[in-house]
Structures are given as structure tokens and as C-alpha cells.
Length: 327
Image (tube, rainbow, N blue to C red):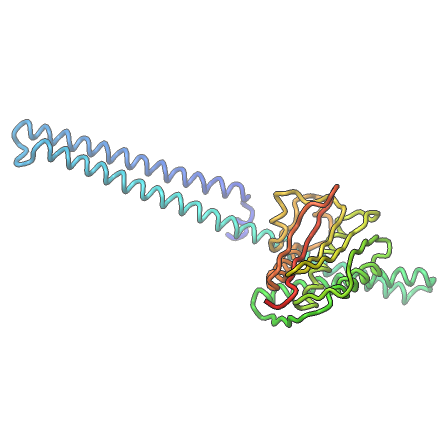
């Protein structure tokens, strides 16, 4: 039975759901029509009986009042039932849609994670086997080792994202916030990526000795995720700009790329768990849809904000705003 439901298209399920709702509302309308007709027939019968002298103590006015009360009762009950039915249908549709969307995103996430885990392991294994079996020049050895290091770094970042996401959602992660040198942290993060991707161009605007409050490991993880995304979605000959600005009460770290950008309708969704853009170019890139979700969660835990705006003339700018001191 489960396999049968899995094969039913989601659109068909939605159509059946709304068809049943329309049928229920139509049945409610027919119920009201039948009761109203019955009420009118009862009034006509009572009036006929009164005119024939069989109405007892009931007068025309009393019969009309009883008819009007019944009509108002039918309308009131019908409207109440209709309102609760529509509100319930909307609530159920929204809840089920969210669960279905979450299930599909989680399914895609598992597929992506499987691929993301296998790729660096396969690359590292192939590199070691190549180095073991062949006598390569120093240049080729360094190239292979560099590729293997990049893949292991990406594997380490993926594992950190998955573990931290699980720990933070369950409340099991105990953060250790304190003041740290944000300038050195940003320079270290960008320097690490510059070594891993020597053909990439990075532009830095980082003043010296800017102090920030938070957990340096987590803030650097957020910055790493943003730089990693900028590298994935930016062509090789375009530069990536990383800036640090100090305001009165907060510091702002900005990562700007010159990629294809993100449409307005997707800007709020990119921070959802497992969400990936529908653009086919994005689907072909590496990723799990977890990095921005975790980054936003970490920044919020630091009482800060993570925002996305358009870069000019094209691309995206992610801004991390964090407090300078403990709240």
C-alpha cells in the first residue's frame, strides 16, 4: 500500500483533496436548500391548517415567527459549519503541504549527502592509489595532493554542518562565546580558501584588530559556508570580495560574489533547511541545502542577523551582523 501511494503524483492528490472539499461545500449548500424548502412547506401547511380552523391556539404571526427563527438557525449553523470547514481545510492543506515539501527536501538531502560523502572519499582514495603505483613528477604530486586536501576539507565542512545542525536543533550544543579578534579570523578563513583555490581571486577589505563577541569556531564556520557558496556559484575569472566593517554596536562581515544572483522570490527560502534553488545550474553544483540554514541558525543564536542583498551589477552579497559585546 505504501508503494502504491508513493507512485501517486502529488498534483493528483491535491486535485482529489480540493475536489472533496468542493463536494463537501456543495453538499452543505444542498443541505441548506433542502431544510429551507422543508421550512417553507411547514409554514405553508401551518397557515393552511390555521385558515381551516385546525391550527389550535397557533396564530399566523406565531407560525411566521417560528419559520423565521428556523431560517436564521439554518443560516447560522450552515455558516458556522462552512467557516470551520474552510479554515480546517486550509490548515490541513498547509500542514500537509509543508510536510510533503519537507519530506521531499529531506529525501533530496539524503541523496545529496550520499554523493557529497562519496566524492571526497573516492578522490582521496584515487589520489593515494595513484601516488602509490606511479612515479610522478613533483608538480603532478602537488596537484593531486592539493585536490585531495580540497576534498577532505569539503568533507570536514559537510560533517561539521550535519553534526552542528543536529546538535543545535536538539539543544545539545553548548557554545563558548567570548570576545575574539574578528579581523584575524576573517583573514585566516580567506587565506585558507586562497591556498585551496589558487586560481581564485579574492578581494579583501579588512581593518586590523576589530573585536567581536561570539564563538570563533562557529562564526568562522558561517564565513566558510558563505565563501564556499561564492566559489561554487561564481565563474573562475570573477573575484570574490570579503569585507569587515565596524559600527557602533555591531560588526558586519560581507561576502560578495559576481555570480548569477538569486531571484527575489528565493531570497527568503535559501535559509530554509534542505532548500536548494530550482535553477538547473544550481542543481548541478555540489551542495546539500544545509549550509545557509545552519549559518542563519548560528547567527541568530549569536543575537545577530544574516541577510542577502543583490550585488551590482550582478551577484549576491551575504552580510553577517554580530554584536561587538555580550548582550
